[in-house]
Image (spheres, rainbow, N blue to C red):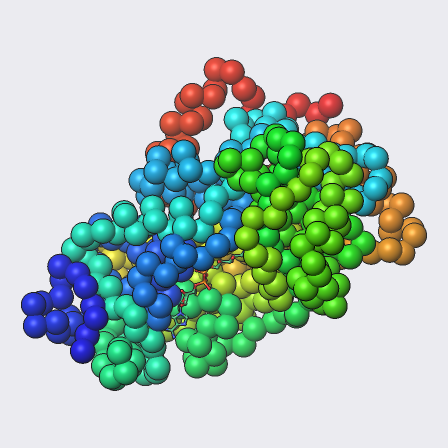
Length: 434
Ligand SMILES: Cc1cc2nc3c(=O)[nH]c(=O)nc-3n(C[C@H](O)[C@H](O)[C@H](O)COP(=O)(O)OP(=O)(O)OC[C@H]3O[C@@H](n4cnc5c(N)ncnc54)[C@H](O)[C@@H]3O)c2cc1C
């Protein structure tokens, strides 16, 4: 039986013979790509192993960059998301108990804010609402891809749908199927990278004192400790530590865990309450050797993964989706074959190097700030003073952290133009050196 649901599936439940595009993976990145392409005229299959609304139950919050906000605005979902998330105007960087704290402010970048924190279900719900009733999208879900056979002009996918095998064909296959990407592995694409010596614990807390809409990245010798402000004075924490220590923080009594958090906050947030469970995640860095083959493109975690310090992973994936959508749309309008390597390489050339920069940046932050060798400790503490004193340095760091470096996808342009227009009277775009 076929569980596909869409206006483009006939009443007999049969699937279209050939799709222009099949997106495998209905996580945030796959859904973003589908939203970006839904009005192009392309016939799109959206294939997801879990039930369509499974993402609404997943509990995690993300730092959302300014660039992701602009992409979501361009896709027409930002007005739904924005009232449900937190906007932060300050990023506070600190090194263990060292007193020099660098406070990054919007004026360092010439913007009104520095970023946002939103929950997974809020983003997924807005994307699903946007896709609701789209004639061009055929949901095939829950369905798992078992095999992909590449031919010259198409890919034949064998899907397991409710225990039965069914095939669909597509001109272009997009793997948005996460870091373990079965499609990437089956295609023989190699990856480079490593598993970190650390894991991270995530949890949602409510502090007694106001979180002040501040995103805190506190560097400890054991690893970075992020506190992301959420609505209703809740915070998502991401505590990174060597595996054994991270496991310990997962297993200890709640009171002991909270005492550790209060120790780390040094009284700044008052008593801490834990809301819900703690979760443990392994941390890895990975970059695929190629993002594309003929008829195949990788996006999001299927193409790359990074350390959660700086909250970049999902944001890179959203950018991949916007860039790939632009490349495909342009090629389609020109009458080119959207699955050809010639077309897909444009996406790879655009995104692979930009992602590598951010992967390197997160790796540098983790290694530099987790290092206990005295000369390095001294250099980085001096570095905090230098950064606090020199505005162009803060500007450069913020350009990277907010996703505002690199090439902007076209979907952001109308929104960008609008906000630039709003700001140009009051704020300079480039900071003057201080
Ligand atoms: C602790 C932690 C904190 C993080 N914090 C942040 C943050 O603050 N900001 C940020 O930007 N990023 C953050 N990240 C990274 C972020 O979670 C990921 O980069 C992002 O979720 C990747 O999304 P994706 O859609 O590419 O993959 P996924 O979310 O993994 O989605 C893949 C989808 O593919 C489906 N699938 C897989 N195989 C198949 C198949 N064979 N057939 C059909 N469907 C299939 C899966 O069911 C799944 O729904 C964090 C990560 C961790 C671990």
